[in-house]
Image (cartoon, rainbow, N blue to C red; front, side, top):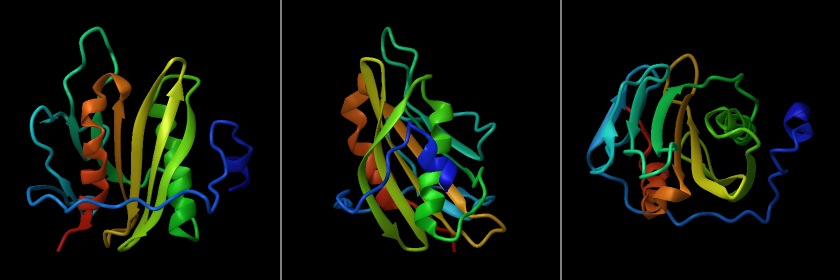
Amino acid sequence: MQALYADPRVPRLTGRVKRMALPRPAKSVVKDRRTGLAVPRLGKPWKTHGAAPFTSKQVLPAARGGKLRGMLVTCPLPIMEQRSPRDTALLAARWTLNHHPRGSKISWLASQRVKTGWMLVYRVKYGKHSSRAAVVVMDGGMSKPGLAFVTVPDSQRKRWRDIGRVVSGVRVLG
């Protein structure tokens, strides 16, 4: 955790970060048996896509003139699990910076406990642009917790509401 707080791209998560009102979960889901999680199947324009290196992947079509696109992925936790789900989610959010442009910085929007884990919603700023993103780390009953990660760039800001649908809809299979 010391390395996390030494990273200038990730600010401290304080008690001032709000909770988020979660919308009703979606009925249609994508089941990821490797993580033990189910995530919402997002409607058009989202499409399922080749998952590698993740275990499931849904993407938005690239916006005109942009190379960034929204994506929702699941995978077994790619980092070491920490003692608390909150700390694990913080490190997972830092790990997601690998999937944003170089020079990205996080600012926190929401943080709260979910059934068997933790959820963080944040803004990722890079240059003149930004993305909204979220991670949900949840124990799906497998050897490692599962990670659901969603990000949507500002060029597709009409889809930012899907982030709330995702974080409210992640659940354990079974």
